[in-house]
Amino acid sequence: MRFIHAADLHIGDSWKFLPQDYLRRQELMLDNIYRVAHKEGIKTVALVGDLFHRKDPTRECRDMVLAKILKYDKYFRTIVMEGNHDSVDAAASNIHFLKILYDLKRFKNTIVVELENKVVPVEDGAFLVMTSFNEEKLIDMASETSSQYKWLIALLHTTTIGVRSDTNWVAQKGWDMQPVPGITYYAFGHIHKFQRLGLPNAFQSGSPIQHKWSDKLPKGVLIVDTDKPTTPRFVSLSKVVRPLYTVKDGDPIPEYGYVKLVTNKNVLGRELPANVVDTERDLSDIKILEYDGELDPTAGLNEYLAKDGLTLDEQKIGIQIAEKIIKEINQNY
Image 1 (spheres, rainbow, N blue to C red):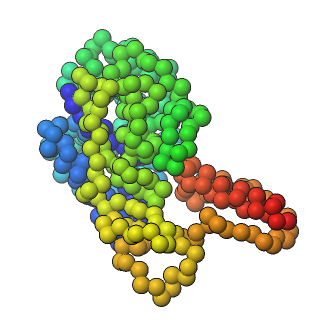
Image 2: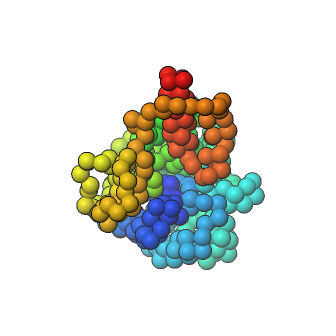
Image 3: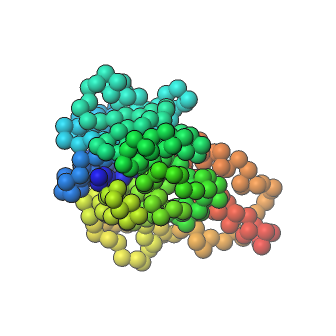
């Protein structure tokens, strides 16, 4: 059987710098995931966590998602599972409104999994959906079901040791992957970069589109064949969803896509292309010549950035900037 492996849709993200277009961009993302499925003759789509970006998605985000799921529910089997961004607490998630409709049997082909692990039979195999990863429980699920099905797909939204982010952060903690008997393919979400993981049949699909300036191309989905689990095919969505570019002053500005300009120049009154939607101070050559007082810029910075909704990768960038400042202080004090 073949299916679409997608993850980390983060509906509602990028609204801060794309307030007019962010939701339209994410509509295109959803439509094109199913367009790929239709073109390839695939009937099953697995959305492996982080459907929404915020724990309290806006009404517009919820309505758009529900409308799309109802539209494609007629033609495709979609497995929607909870991710860390979807989790509100131990007893609730932001996809609960979808789970209510699923429990009331309002969907024809859509399966919604939150708060608990679930075995989802599909044709001659099954998806092992783990909303909260635990290696022992995965081993038990595979052991209990492997004799019943021709193939097993593990849907996991978690971090593995050695996984690499778009900013080249490498995870030192997480699941130290070992083969689980009976598992045909491991479909991961959580990290936004497409990559093979520590086993030949384990992949992060990455996010279907860029959500932040630090997200690097390419972005897309995977087409997985259970008969060829070590060679899923990556399909880019970058040509149909406008990409994000970060450029410095003097570099050519792409015509197609949204652009953040990194500059030390005053942008007030400058005529910039309409697709330059954000600017940032260029700190690469910053020099601190004077410093008075005593201060540790990194004290409490991780907690502050986390409360502001920044990812671990973005928090790391913030710490690196603070450490650069400290280094300059020590050199010039």
